[in-house]
Length: 518
Image 1 (cartoon, rainbow, N blue to C red):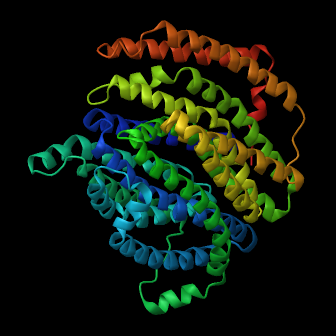
Image 2 (cartoon, rainbow, N blue to C red; image 1 turned 30 degrees about the horizontal axis):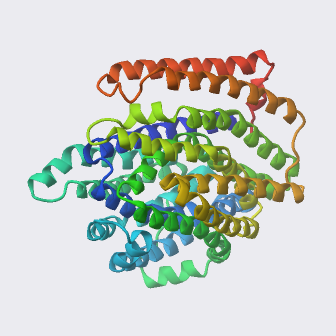
Image 3 (cartoon, rainbow, N blue to C red; image 1 turned 30 degrees about the vertical axis):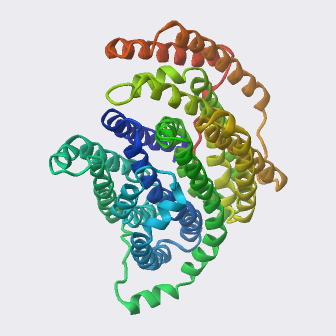
């Protein structure tokens, strides 16, 4: 399997997800702006998203996917299918209890997340509407782990598009009906989230049937008892404990930051969310794609004891990270205002919202390289089923991030929260890198010095052009001339890309080194 092709497939489908996700935020910005009701929805939506990252894409995936890859490589497909069914049964019942409890205690959860919201009661109600979403996406995560292990990456990567389309449809078509019925229109977005969760799970089933690994979920007490006694379930739970702690640290940081943002002032939660949506383009297209492709490949190499292949795949991922993440970080730092103005400045989204979102986006850009590098380095530990080190690092990073908040938030407000996250990501990636090097699990291949100099040169030239373009065009003042702004933006991005890759070619970079097979 060509790893670059697999990563490119995931990236292209993730691009579709990010584009529709951006469309979702454009609908939100145009229809609802960055006010108290929007803050309430964004805080409520963060709760199921936080739990999704905590359980589904976080601790569960980190524990389950490496075990799945090792089991298939060592014991074959039949044993792997039995493991999948046992884990699916236990997961289903755990999710059912979690969702029921979550609906009941939603007021407490919202208070812990964002007690400073003006529309606190609305956030509680929307949280209750959306809490079952965690059940659907957790089962989607299990399906994605199976499909990725069988090297079927397309459906899991494409399914988030359905959530975004559901929310866009809810915003455009359902919210006007809510308004006519005397219901606050933003509640339609919560309904869109639930529909999206159902659709995401529904599209996994045909793909699972094609690979012949549809989980058999036991719906009786006897079936649950049998599943509980499967040895693989206990391995997953044992591995989930440290992974859950590690992911919990990141989500605790998010909770603290949301709490702080809710007290900074109306709009702060929304400005951070809109900036984060733009950050998800590079982190999704590169970071998520590399993580999805590398985890099963690294797990298989580790299972076979092939340390050279394991190290070579990490090296490939890190080089690709520097090649693509550094220019993106430069663009976010020097070209943030044009991007925010073009994408968001319409309807209820004002020029002041552009400036505040720009500040957050620039602060996020500082740590982009670290955010993506973590997606490559952390799987290096997960594949070795060594989760304690990432957990210890995550705890340290949480402490460092909150100490940085004490410095930056009084000075920079909501942008200080984003800057602290960025610096924390850089610290996280550096410590993970040092950990892999000390274990001699990763040995950098020759040529890193010249490669880094070429990327730095190309990024500097591209950044210089974007600085000029950001200042030469009155991006905010051109609000009423969207077509002209779009044309100028397309031209600027095209010139920047040509300048970057032409510089790399002229300086002698061999792009064939990235055509790796695994």
